[in-house]
Amino acid sequence: MQGSARRMGVMTDVHRRFLQLLMTHGVLEERDVKRMQKHCYKVHDRNATVDKLEDFINNINSVLESLYIEIKRGVTEDDGRPIYALVNLATTSVSKMATDFAENELDLFRKALELIIDSESGFASSTNILNLVDQLKGKKMKKKEAEQVLQKFVQNKWLIEKEGEFTLHGRAILEMEQYIRETYPDAVKICNICHSLLIQGQSCETCGIRMHLPCVAKYFRLNAEPRCPHCNDYWPHEIPEVFDPEKEREPGISKSNRKSLRSRRH
Image (tube, helix red, strand yellow):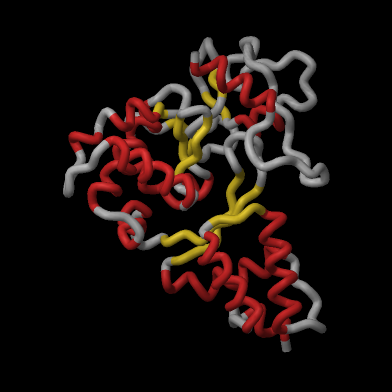
């Protein structure tokens, strides 16, 4: 019976609880998603075999399709940890954020987003963002208030802050890829390996192609002398580590990645 329910894309209480929890979190790492899936089975269908995560999510997505909502899988740009987010395909994420943020706060996000997209490194300094406070639509905002709003974006997993600079959270990239491609067609950067939107990564100094750090790590894993996949010139950056799900790693950016990011920003 369960097999036929799965093929027809029928949602059980297990699926519903899982979806509810994911909606609450906004975005989760794969290991937490697997933990959450097991928890949902334990609560609602203790004796059932836990479905393979991919099949389980495909089943939910087949039901959500008509609502233009989808559970999307992506990876973090700094070290390639797999993440999942519930994405609304019908509206741009900036308008989706309108339920949580005021007009002037949303405008601050748009301005931060523009600075991040336009930057070479994929980061915008808090100073540069706060300098735009006077240009915001809606109610006037002081710099102190704007600093608090930026922290709210970090807490809600739209932005990440590193050493006084902001970049997009994996959630924002997953949810806003289409919006960013359409809104900033001339400034948008694409990874040469996975062809997805690229915010932070490494670039070839000869031909200018770009790659996500996890894509760099995987592509050059077996190469003693790393060469650009496009022009074959020597790749001058430090090669980051490949994410290993077997190793318990602290969330965040690895030391080698932090070093390469810093060198690119200065």
